[in-house]
Image 1 (cartoon, one colour):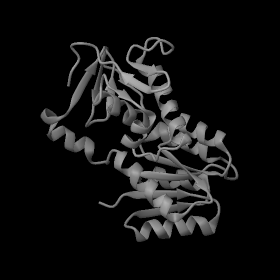
Image 2 (tube, rainbow, N blue to C red):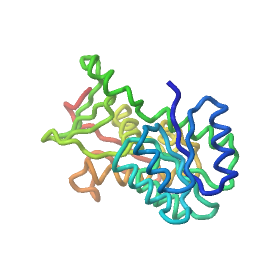
Image 3 (cartoon, one colour):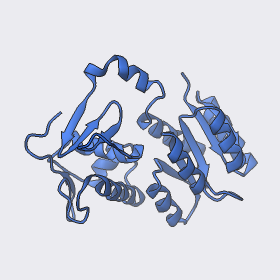
Length: 242
């Protein structure tokens, strides 16, 4: 099954160039010139990934991405103008999986699409999990349980902890490498980022969001501890296991 991608971009030439290039590389691509058109397409059909221009007339890409996050686990890549670091940070805080800086090379778009799609759950996965439930991988930590195959976390009362894919990616890295010091570079590599100052900031943002969801006191974390000048350690309490 081809991965389905929607490209939301108000510049016609760029929109068509991205769609043509991704289509030539094996993806099923739809395009929209603004957020309203994108909403109509997304309501009518499913997509694996969305590439959203942030600076569009009318509803901007950040607002559209927030709406997408409330409806689906679709992968999101934001496109932002050079020098607008604030847009990138806000996008990551809203649960984006990656970003690209305009003007960009089409090869860079393809590389980032491939990286995000490797981390996005396939639509068929929930059905497959039902038939192979006995083989699913779980890990408990404190009062939480992480289902690696279902890509969800539940609390002590069984309630699902709302978590973006990018947050779960980082959590999985820590759980599968518990009680080990991980540098930002190692975390970036494990989740498919190229290590640079922006990637390090992206890792920090995801960890900040994770702490708010799994720590009783995020300012004094029990699990996800900072080692100043080195990186992070996920402390797995004695007795917790797969």
